[in-house]
Image (tube, rainbow, N blue to C red; front, side, top):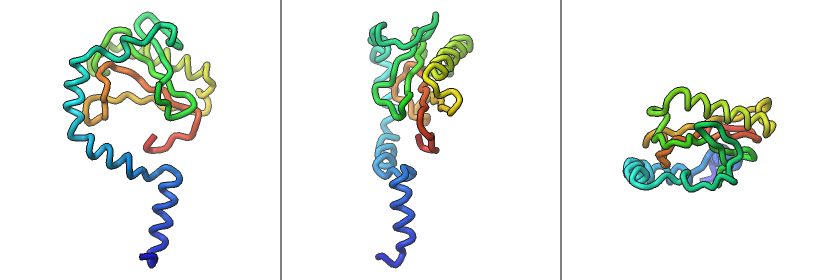
Length: 149
């Protein structure tokens, strides 16, 4: 078993630095078949963003608002959400998308990650891993981003 110690060492290193996530891989393999059903269920319910109190907003424009992510994956992680429910970026008017991006850019500058770098993530439809069908943009920064997050 230990004859291939280099392979085991590479696997351990990949796991330690976050490039190997076997639990996450298994979760997404199992979840893949359920994502279309998640879309149906999400669309049949009120948007979870509609109930966020105004005092939790960290920024606002005429058509959008921003809130801190409740499960942050980095020191800076907030969402920009249109006030009107559009299910995805595919149906959102370009001027609203632009306004959302501009609000996010203003906030990354204020939070000091504009120069060091950040990521914008928009999940769209089942194969894009969308689970909440109210468009929202994740702005993530404050640490080194990797291929998988």
